[in-house]
Length: 66
Image (cartoon, rainbow, N blue to C red):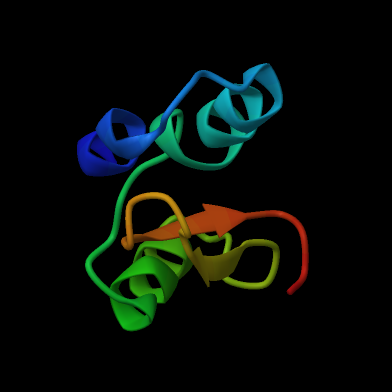
């Protein structure tokens, strides 16, 4: 994540808002299985979906189906 931010040539408010919404405000998981296991342990396995983050490369959970 830090690498991505440092490599940008100039700030883009739209991208910054997307990074905050989809990455920095969420827990990071090492892979899809780890994310799914955490959702199941919290009783949210049928509500949360995992996705690989384009900004940090880790996995996050979301309520939006892929």
